[in-house]
Amino acid sequence: MGNREIEIAIHGTNGGYRTITRDPVAGLFDARRDYSKVASMGSEAYSIHFREGCVIFSKYKIVRDVLGDSRTGNIAFSVIVPIDKKFEIADVKSLLDRVDTEFSNKEFSEGKTYIKNNNLGAVRNDWAFLDKIKEDYEPKFRN
Image 1 (cartoon, rainbow, N blue to C red):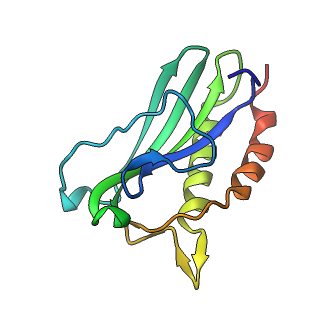
Image 2 (cartoon, rainbow, N blue to C red):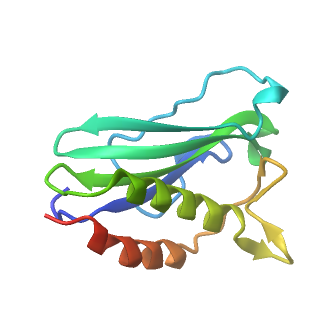
């Protein structure tokens, strides 16, 4: 992380596991287990992952990968924070929840949202909302 700013990434199973947002980010990982318990659909969990020079905070949700034959998968929202930044953990959770909410409710065509009834549909490359979220939260992550 040469720019020493926070980064926001969305990754998960959307026709197979991959980074969905525009720029690949090192250190993200596929946290799903390969089982299809219907009862777990919609479950959420938060994680912390350490990578050289930064900390990655993520929020994972269990969803169906509609493009991947409706297999059980996940969608993850991650913020990558340089290790020298100071911040409140409540701000990290708030950021992750906001990314989740805005992404999940984002309309991509004719009123269809990216996630409906725990089904992750086709995702279009319109990431301007992430730039706005980053702009709103960047001052909360200070040196």
